[in-house]
Image (cartoon, rainbow, N blue to C red; front, side, top):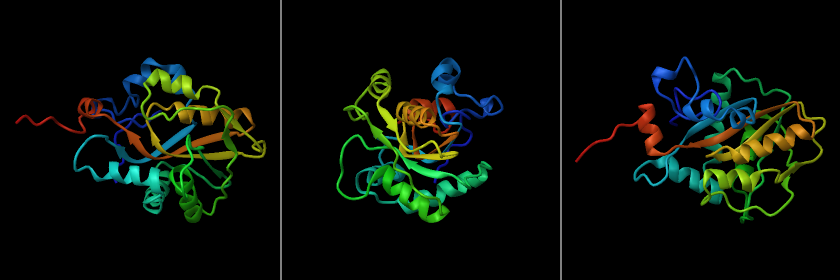
Amino acid sequence: MLVPTPHCRHCYKPISENFESWGKCRDCNEEPLLRDALPDRLVIATLYIPKVTGYEHSQEIIDLKERGEYSQVYAEVLVKVLAQENIDVSGGVIVPIPQTKARQGVTGPIALANSLSGQTGLTIRRCLSFNRPVKSQKTLSKGERENNMRGAMTATYCADIGKALLVDEVFTSGATLREGTRALMAAGAQEVIGVIAARDAGLKSLEYAGVVKRVED
C-alpha cells in the first residue's frame, strides 16, 4: 500500500519533504477551524487518485465502496499503521460512518469495520445515523460537501464510549469525518480516531508534494 509519507499530521494529505518537520499541509494551515474539527488522530492506508489509468489502489477503493471487496486487506494495513503511529486502540469501539445511499450486501465502511473488528477483537457500534436526507458527496464541491453534512448526523448510545474508531473508506474534503466526529463527541464519546482506507489526492496536490512528477511527451 502507498501509505502517504510524509503527510499532514491533521488530514494525512501528502506533503513535501521540506515541510515534514512543520507537519501541516497548506489547507490545514489556512483553515484552522476545519482542521480542529477533525478527529483527535487519523490514520489512512493508501492514496485514492481518481481518473489515473493503471493505479490499482483507486479501483480497489471503488470495489470496497461498491461491493465490500478488499476490506480484509485494507484492515490489515490499517492495523499496522495504527501500530506504527503508536495509537493504542485497546478499549475502543469501532463506529462505521453511515452510507448516504443503501447498497446491497455488506459494503464500504461497514465491510471495513467488520474486518477491523475481526483483526482487533473490538466491538462494532453502529450508533451513527443521518437525521435528514443528504446527497452523495461524490459530485459536490468542497463548500457543498460541508453544507451537505453540517449537522446531518446523530449519535445514540455513545455516553459510555471512551474511544471511538470512526471508520470510512475515503477521506476527500473531511466533511463527513468532521460531522461524524462532532456527533460522537456531542453524544459523549471522549476520543475519536479516524480510520480510513484511502486519502483522496488529486494529481496537482501530489505534484506539489513531490510524490509524482510530470513527464512531458
